[in-house]
Image (cartoon, rainbow, N blue to C red; front, side):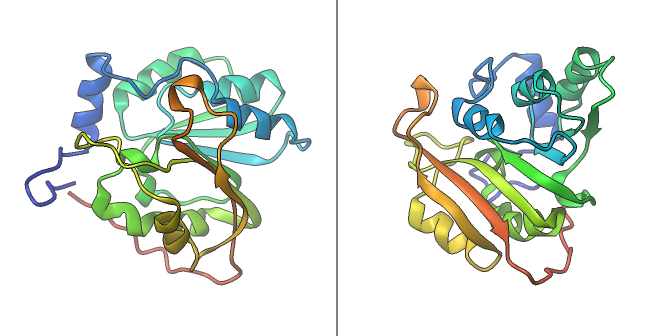
Length: 213
């Protein structure tokens, strides 16, 4: 990924590897996100195919495993993060780990969990995110997760946004099943998150999402 207007950090694999090597991982809460835990708790089908892109240390996957989910794909562009995951989940057949670019990935999932992935993208790729998500979901699949509903004073990542911005971004691709301020955020994120459940609209989007550097 190239610098955007020469202002933004180069958010490629090398950048994220450096963050993990130096343990500059302020986004990591050390546990499953409370809103996602609440959502996961009401799921009954343990066989659904789940993707967690930009998963980092994948605390949501720990919780999914505790509950007996059987098809969990973890994806991160950072080889450092993936090395940690390979060791952490080395005996877990329910976990598949991909060191890959989300926008180059092909697959079909019943559920995609969003947790500090969108906010870490180079902002010039934001417009590609909804269409790619739609392309990766099954007909009855869902994109479920959290978006920062605030603007940050410091140049990101993380990058923020507003409720109106997200509504405009997702409307062409998704029907909203939940789209509201989050009532049960982690204490460090109280008042800053939007919780969403989005179902893909029934028309295809061509999978033309190259992010070649």
